[in-house]
Image (cartoon, rainbow, N blue to C red; front, side):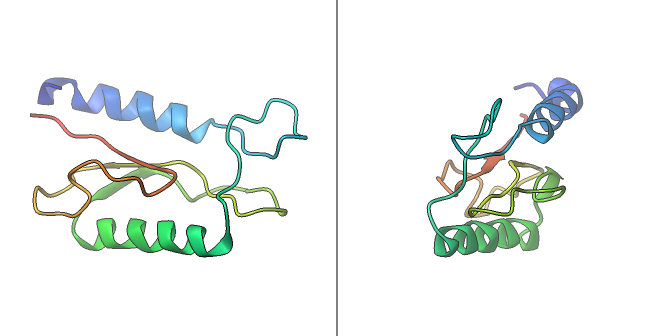
Length: 102
């Protein structure tokens, strides 16, 4: 997207991701379930940590309450991901998304 649109899209995407309701199949209105295992959650958390260490900026994610039963994580949205970051190109790290402008 054009960089002039980035702030507006950042705000909207972060708000949408932050409003996602977590829960299992038995939770009415749940929009996102748990990760498959504790190991998977640890890999996703490590990947998020790597992105932040490489200079990405987290707009939202991994804050707030999560259900007690299961391997839940809040959706994470990154911006300002450096071009040389392993997260600049699309990867499947679970609950994270990247936003960039040109």
